[in-house]
Length: 291
Image (cartoon, rainbow, N blue to C red; front, side, top):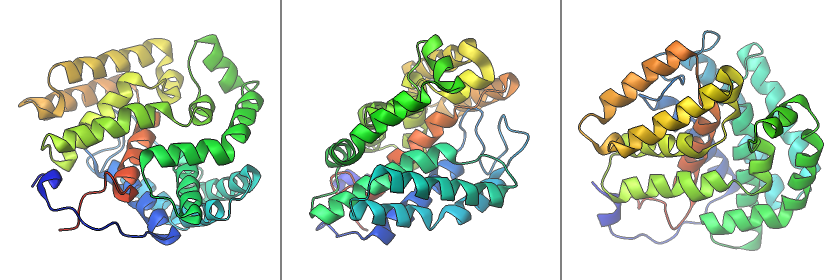
């Protein structure tokens, strides 16, 4: 049933534990989604020979307290350095759980910052909605994120992004995640309003993100040619009707095989989709009513 047709419910006051738990569930939403080009799911390992869904589940279990902790730091209006230390400790737990495999480094950064922003809104007694989250992120840690971008731009990854004219993950954060707030979240909400199932809506949101994001995972694996191929494939998929079309699943599976053959994996888009799923779970103006 289309959630938009259900009666509205009274807003429920969430806690840091609720917000952190929603982050873990959102990462599971992303993992469980299939088909999705080149990415790990419960169906297969995509373009990855060193990890599978079990690896991701071990990582999720190791991270389940991190999102609650960083939300609580946000609620305390902690400085960025405290958030960074919390994230570094979480990454160490992830690597210990996965035997050194990076499953969720990007999600630790992105979802961690969003949980902190949600915590700041809890402290301020403000409603949880996308615009308020973005404003809280800018207000409390925007200057620190901009300084971090200048710092990491001198590292090899940052220099490579500049050389190719790409917006790095650090720059995306310093701009308060424009692709997440301006592309992924609206695409997910629009698909659900049109009556698509959660699976089809998430597929469309993933492809909309792939079409827009300067995904460093794609550039690292396939160079600029790989990134541009993935972006063009995503645009073509959406232009042909996306997941709403009769051939939507078959076309997504065909692109999955193509990405696997090319060893492409849009990990940045996957993290962004997880963040959109988290927002769908916690934000009052886009949260589906209780049954």
